Length: 353
Image (cartoon, rainbow, N blue to C red; front, side, top):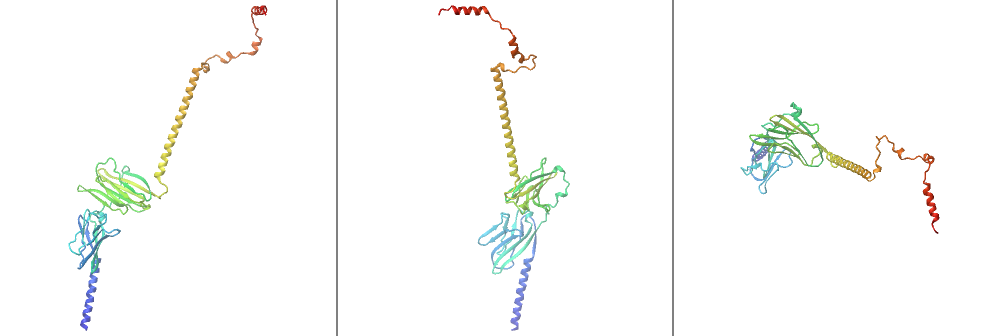
């Protein structure tokens, strides 16, 4: 009887130790070097049937990758075509990641669902050996001509693309860094585009939007459904053959349906254009009217020369020439041919009746 009780206690101790060992295995965090084709190991220590393997990353909503023996594989859009399940054993959920960037740094967790043992998890920390750009542009003494500032106003819930415009008088650009400063926060790097060993390396650290990098080192940030918290300063730093050049954009987000600078400026331009056109029409109408009046006066002068205006430079007074004085006419004698009048009266009397 005592032997049976000792066996039971021994079995309970073994089960307890197994549980503690499994718990310690789950809490252990493995560190992995960030490099091309890095492998994140996830090999379940016990035996059983595999139900599902899922990989998640801290602070991300969607799973990185999921494997199901019956339904196949599923990947997040950021890890599609970059993650591969190795499957070296029945309960192996290890993956490899290619085309790695600094965005792949972080804490990953692998969860293996088995039957009949249940789930098993492990954590892996991907460490950054190549330190990301840590310099701060505010500490650099930049010349005034190297800094360009632009203002941008956009309405809330709209889509927006912020582009880093290449500086003038620059032939070679080695690296472009896109930073963001929201409200009273410090500058944080959200994107890097640079040339490495003749190839293009793009790094995206943004939690809002998507950073794209073109072959010509043109960096752009695409924001979908912008909100008030997206307002702030965005800065592009170009490392060129002639030094550092900076392009800063101040983004202001206006409430939806509220004041819009674009709409206001459009109204200003339309009003100014309409006023200029109206003023031009008034000037043309007055000019045409004045021209018609001058032509009408010239035509009247041609038809009636007497209506010509007198020459003010002549010393002759026209008024005294044409005006007659009544009093002088009354005092002047009247002359008549009396013989002609008498002969006319005699002729009338001699006419037969």
